Length: 149
Image 1 (cartoon, one colour):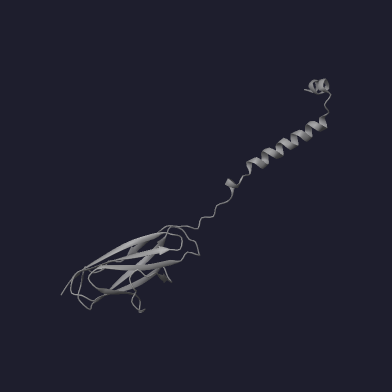
Image 2: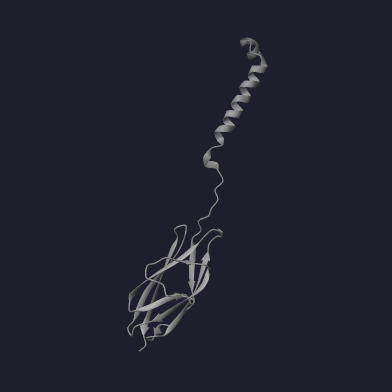
């Protein structure tokens, strides 16, 4: 190899400089934006519901216990609830708060809570509850109660 350098009269110092430049350029190319550390903050969730009665009488209130179960933990996740009644008439509320208005979005302050549904008709009743988070995840729950009058 020294014979090659002697033949072309190239000193070792320029070769070391060239080698250093090549090494630096390969190192810089390998560090791209695609290698940035990703922090996951979007965790899907499940919703668990305790059993509820199948029958409800006009004026009767049914307790619905709900728990949001996260698949991961991101401290800035916020949860919301909305509902729509498509059969019969009734009122859904969070603890002792005023009843929810259909299709309005309400904030949920905790991940474990109770809803109270009060029947306002003598026919079967059906409604959907959507629980969503501020990251676009959503779960739909359907409740159906038979009239017991």
